[in-house]
Length: 150
Image (tube, rainbow, N blue to C red):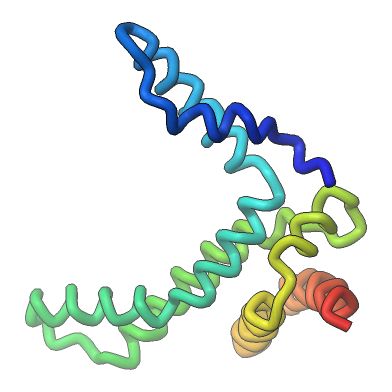
C-alpha cells in the first residue's frame, strides 16, 4: 500500500549527521513533518488521539484553574475543555472524505474500536450542540469504519 511518503527518508532522520549536515537534516526533518501534517494519516490519527485524551486535557485544565483560585465552576470548565477538544478534533476529521482512496487507506490504517468510539462520541457531542452538518460528515466516516471492522 502506498502512503505517499518515502519511508527511507523518515528512518534516515534518526542517523547522526556529521558537521554542517546537521542543519540540512533539520531542514529535511521539518519538511517531512510539515508534509506529514498535510496527510490523511495525520488527520485521522490526531482526531483519534484528541478524542481519547480529552479526559487528560480536562484534568489539566481543572488543575490550572484550581491554581488560579478563581472559584470557577467545575462543570463550566469541563464544558470549555470538551469544546476545545471536540472543535480541534473536528478540524482534523473534517478533511477526511471516505470516498477518497487515500483517505480510505488512512481510515483503514487506524480502524479499530477506538476510532469507532471516537467517531460516535463526536457525533453525540455535536448532536447535543445541534451541529448536524458535522454529524452527517462524521456519520459517513463512521459508516466506512464500521464496514472495515466487519
